[in-house]
Image (cartoon, rainbow, N blue to C red; front, side, top):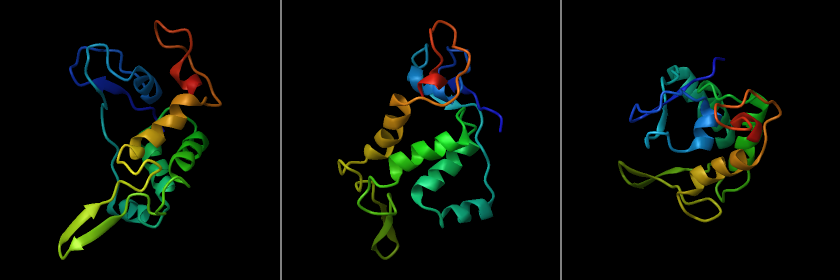
Length: 149
């Protein structure tokens, strides 16, 4: 799958980094956020098939479709670490009906019982571990971001 590129929401950073470089940089040079240049598409059948998977496998499938510049095995390992056993509900982020016709997405089943766990746990292992492959260092850096994963 082709690696997706990310762009600066303020259009001041023209470097078009890959996912790992965008995450490591955090904020674009112009102060904007990095967003994918394009979004993957899913068929209805593909979306419905996600419902039968554990949360970490759903996250893996979606990250893979975004063309994240890491090996598929590494993406699966990171998602399993982030969402596999860290939540007190196996559904991770269940949707519950509060009253007839009104539903709530529960984002407090993680280790700190706060919605931030959804992003923090995904970012934590990716920011502190290394990928098994290396790539050419981005301009102005000594090592590539991908090697940090």
